[in-house]
Image 1 (cartoon, rainbow, N blue to C red):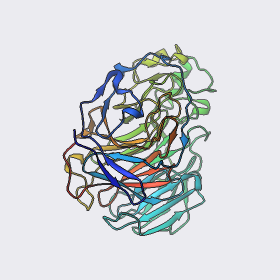
Image 2: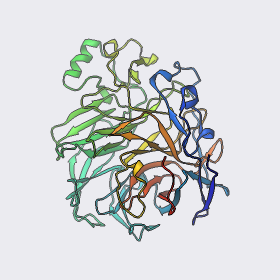
Image 3: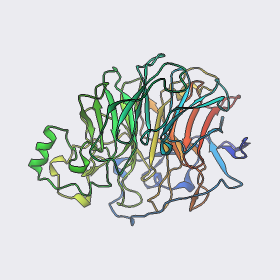
Amino acid sequence: MTAPKRLLLSSGLIALAGAASAAPLTGSAAYGDWRTDGPGVVRHITKDDLPAPFATRPSAFPPAQVAPPADAVLKTLPGFTVTPFAKLDHPRQIRVAPNGDIFVAETDAGKITVLRAADGAAAPATTSVFAAGLGQPFGMAFFPAGPHPRFVYVANNNSVVRFPYKAGDLKASGPAETLIAKLTGTSGGHTTRDVDFSADGKRMLISVGSGSNLAEGMPAKAVPDAKAWEATHLLGSAWGREEDRADVLSFDLTGGDRKVFASGIRNCVSLRVNTVTGDPWCVVNERDSLGDDLPPDYATRVKAGGYYGWPWYYMGDHEDPRLKGQRPDLAGKATVPDVLIQPHSAALGLTFYTARTGAAAFPANYRGDAFVALHGSWNRGKRTGYKIVHLKLKNGVPDGGYEDFVTGFVADERGVWGRPVGVAVAHDGALLFTDDVSNQVWRVVPDAKGHPAS
């Protein structure tokens, strides 16, 4: 085990280089809580590790949001440093333009802000509002792919718009063009929407979370009627107030030709297409009130036409006891996700590490891997999440485990001073992530002396 190294940050906070990777925690040991977190800790949960429903009493335990304690530390792997990069207004999703400009959705303020920083810089030199007056913006994507996109697409709570764009624009050069005026018939419940494009550049993918925990208020359908509904939607598609929700939707590039790409995904907060393999991915918040350790959140490749269980099943063939017997025809048809994450961790952000060069490029063994931001639990008796985790991929396929990469936002049993949301790779190779409690964008870089492979 490598001895920890304390690094005083310019903000007065401390980054702590933690221990190197250890053997994965499996079975019941993989659940744990924030007290067992730390850089290099690897958890590997499988569908066979799940406890019985209601093995523990469902909990509501929202965190108190506190100022960083005097001894607050962020911990990261040996050979890396994490520092504050920029202060914004409740920053959420983050994306990096091909020219290196950093776009951040300040969702509550209804605006998109651009940060410009030279490669290797510890802070942005320029901050500019790209667009304002938006409806809870979250997802952003540049189109077409390559160095010269012509549009910035923005997914609002219940609409999709695009702005004209050329590399270097700090403010939108024209008004928003509305492509989809109404994504779904309801807009409450889960409100984040994300947007990306298929690998061939022909389809726009939009993630839409459910309007409820477990389709409460959705009228019952007999199995034959449900199958008739699916004939014009997709296997496992919900209806009523949940129509076109808990789905990834597919459109042409101007918002027409609506289709359901994948169904039964309760809340795909970040939707990203892996540019190396072409696979769409989701990081997903699963349902509540089955107990502390059920069911896991997850990160997964998303198959066209795939059904992922919500609301009737979870993690494959596990039937939700609250809807027992309603859809026997779906038994055995739900896809098991790739990477199961501690239940109620609130997985929000996703990025793939693709940088090959740059002043802050990670070592080559990280190339092609993924990073996920866990916002942190509010409905689990023992707090989990509040960290950035690393997923190892080989040829685009995850190994099923995940490694703690940045931890330390939990102050004590009740209070937290940071909650990660979005994650992205900067032009210079640094890893950036947003935090909507400290209202900070953070930057993770390798130390000048390098570090061991993880």
